[in-house]
Length: 189
Image (cartoon, one colour):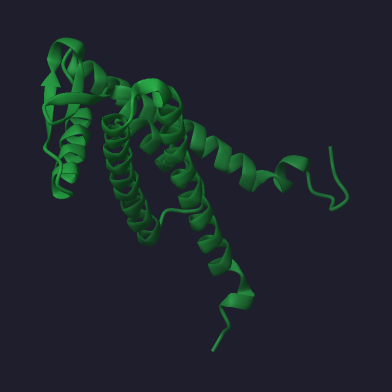
């Protein structure tokens, strides 16, 4: 099938198809790596969940709370405690790795690989982790200072917020690439 420009339809959509293909392959491969990582942890808490719980407790201590983090291997969770009372449990679904897999897959699919892209991906992964630490710490504070009545609402709001961060990172990268590829923004000397 040909269109008005006398190019086959698949050629007109080649960049989009290429993005989708790379994205899907990268997502599938990174998801397999992630599943292997989880299997390696066995019934214990995975290292990223431990790290997230420890960082959240550290950030709470930095602002004056008596916070700590403890590993509950039998339940495969890392707990964040304030004043020795567990407030939040960090499990594999909360550790941010699945969000990072999504972020990296998109980045790999969008445009060619450059060191600028690698640097942006690295900073994006750090931003996702830092945001996730803040998300867990603030959720622990909300639970500490309120009753658990609104826990599900708070948890879902905070979960959605990390995806908003990823969307902002994606938009930032696509705008950056689009602006740098626009000849009007790169005048020749």
